[in-house]
Length: 457
Image (cartoon, rainbow, N blue to C red; front, side, top):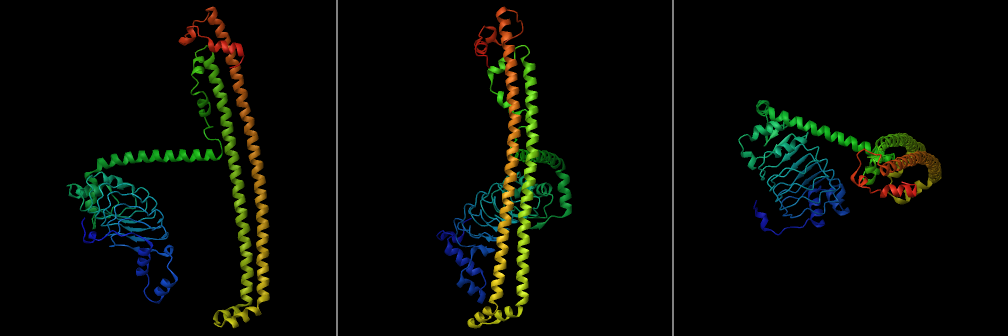
């Protein structure tokens, strides 16, 4: 890894270096000189070459927001960083550096060609978001575990892979293993994989691959199910009814009620509690279904509003274009003459001759803009009124359903109180033979005494 240019002082990737690089790589003729005079905007640069500059750290690239190709090869870079904003990057060359870990590439979702050749990498990972990756060069690194190949199966577009010069490339089964587990690969270590080799590799590793595919299918199914559950929950949250389509709310209310659990031993309490739960859950499900219906109505209202706004703006723009087109048609020859004229006084004279029509066009366009503002204000006010009414009705009906839950709870507590008092009397008289919790059988009736004294539960 020691290179001749390592004896140079490490250089900082600052604006001066970037401006010089952009200037050197841009057009060199008259257009290039003009661009240099006016200043080159980094956001307009599509390709940037920064190789052989003894760069130690990647920095100051955030301004190249539309960059598609970046060369940082043959430097002394130790860490992949500072690339977060380069989301349009398609081609990245970081070969011949001192990188030990693959990182900092999460946002480069459009990357198709990645070269990390001749670095110090020992593990292939942290590439999950690069779903468009087609070419991956990792030759001359320190990868020694063949299981790294399994990781690459997730990249469905990968067609070219280079791993020569790594410890794994010395393994006897190296080529066959890769051809078997990466069946869609076309080139390995700069050589095309022939069909015969693919067939031999598949036959040799068929059992292992079938088992791996089975596990992958199970994992994919689980991931899809989890994703569907997350999306469903998000939909419920948007409707303000999450976790109301079952017994979650009821169970959470009594999850830590240890005293209440003791009461379930009393005769008749278990059946009473089950009835209470069933009725409570039915009300929750009613709230849930009502909430989803109301959310659908709100969504329809929002879609209608967005459509109205879009149509109003589009219609207004079309009217403006028609007025401008009529103006241009009327003054076509004058406009051509103005464009060809180089003397400013003559230009001003020509403009003055059609100033009345220009003023008329200006007034017409301003009138259209005022009409659009009034139309949008009216649409927004109507939308706000409709949403407020819908939300108010939703809250009112949900409060009514919640009141049913409270009534149900009060009725349950009343029945529970009756059972508790009846059971207490039987315990005192010694008429109760059923199994009870130890503290009840031992005569600790504090909870029941409190119930009897207060008349509440």
